[in-house]
Image (cartoon, rainbow, N blue to C red; front, side, top):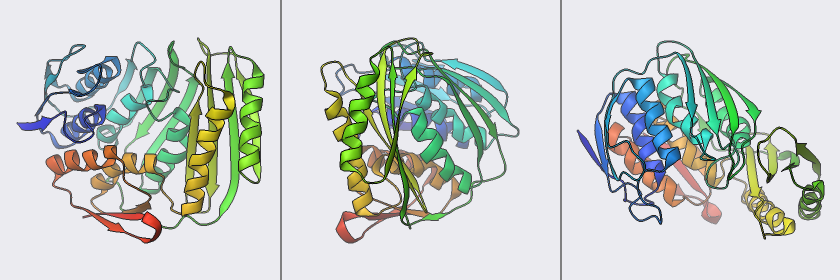
Length: 336
């Protein structure tokens, strides 16, 4: 049984989620201890527990220690089975992270799966649905994956209640690709979404983005379907060879201008650096590239999440990651 230190490196929930995915892919049982031990609320929280239960259901796994607050988990996988599944986080915890946990093994399963997820779709501690749809899944599509997703209802923090559906159709092993050229910027789209809040919040956010970034097309979307109040600003930068999505989340007491300025700064920095993969996407691509057994991508600085994720992937697959420093701090990540 593989032993994993849940407090190593970045020490967050990514260690657990990657371990669950890789366990189902390889059939390797594992024990993870000290789960999120250095966090203010250590141990399994609702969204982590939802990922554990989802992985266990998909893989007919035996689990021990699956409870709120648990810092020690044992996971003995069976074979990942395609099918129709419905998973609920139960709070505004991220539904997208649960989807990303079960997606790798279902891509390698013997048939298609239909999935439904309920929980948070837009909160600051996880990739929002729009990032998944427009940045992450298109890269997987280039690698041969067939994944269709649909946002049925947004779920904002703290109420949640969002819904995502997905159809996963396995089509053979993922293909290695080289994602090293970004190309020129074709379009920049800014969308300010407001739910049960004044539309003027979104209008103020768009003004900031339009002042900072050139050739922006912007719109305000008033969401009348979400169960609770919320605000998110999405800045999508569409380039010849890549798409990046930068996000600002509205918070009580934080001016709309400040929310927008943060997202605009991230977009500006990525455009200026000229790399095809932003820092957040680089974290998400490590596992699919390892599944493909090769390929490379160019990104900016590596986050703590990415370095920790590499360690977990090595433990299960023996993958070798080569990190080459390029000009202006860019890095090329090659999988061997």
